[in-house]
Length: 148
Image (tube, rainbow, N blue to C red; front, side, top):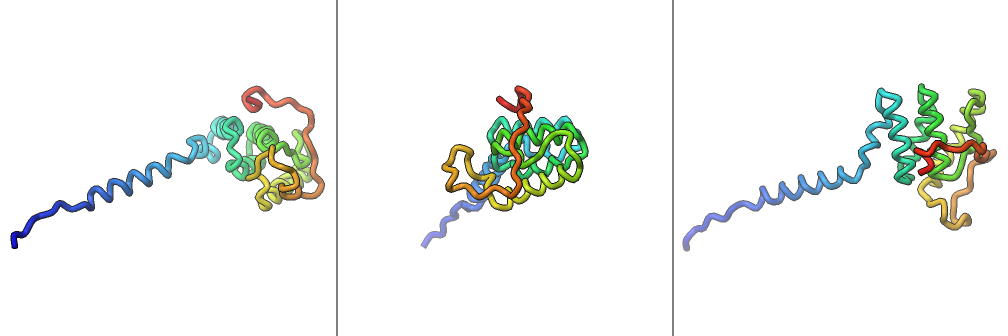
């Protein structure tokens, strides 16, 4: 019997594995990395990009920005959350620290219920119950960047 050398298929397998991992990484929107940027302008742009893309999976990241050190980031996070979910949970611009903290806690309860994953146009009977003491929009118009 003559021995034949067969080329290894391992390099081909490794190439497919690397390509698959690269594709998985491509599913994460590029703006997500900027939610924790040192630059407040980049954080604002990340929040706006998530709202414009209707990225409901980014709602927990945006809720974190409600406690941002920069008041501009906080403001745009509030507007983005209202655009994505239709909710405010009592959060208003310029409110007291205690009221703001209570509203942020209601946002965290909303996330814990998983309600942020549901589409705004789904049947309301299937939605998770909103947290207690829910406030609604203030009537302040969102800038065009957030509305579009």
